[in-house]
Length: 281
Image (tube, rainbow, N blue to C red; front, top):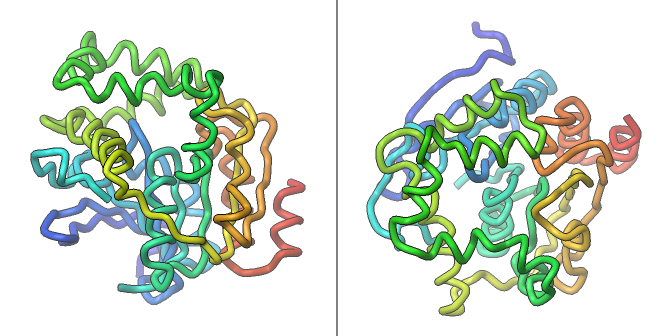
């Protein structure tokens, strides 16, 4: 029998698209589903997955549609947003996690968000110049084909420099960029942002109150999002707890993997006292 922390690869069919997934732990254990952001792939979750598996959970991390080894259907519409799971999301994956909790709360037992924004909170904050100038890339991504050319040129030089400025190591950067290196992957990854923008314009963004127990883990050295966005709007999220990690950046699960894993374990195990003990690590 494989060890609980061993990683297993499988391909699943989801909504007509094949998703490459990596899992750790026993499949009959409580499930934790990890959703990565841009530019990344399943491997951004490698250390928290092993820690959660050793704690008795079934940890699963897919390459999101369009990334890595998952299918890459053409067209922006393909990127518009059965078992109950504990759901974790970082960056754009956090937006998907918020949307899932709003649209299908019956499928999510507990929610964890890592350096990502609640959609309503972001709509409010982006009206400020301080956040608008940090979100320039959202509007740049709306241009056809140019972002794909610019970001991929010289072996992703601009992306590499940005991730290095965030504090990621050369090894982590090389690993994460495998998510957008395959043919059509970068365009598909950017299509997530295009679809999200146009869904917002057309009023298709989910708007429902989240009553699920929610943990927000926030690296305070976040350069891309205003600090106010750490706290989800109280009128839209009723049971949120925010834990700040002062020494961590946007990539909080890379900068403080043991602390993040302990917080996730405590949150998903359902003990508030354990959560507070984990946050003090």
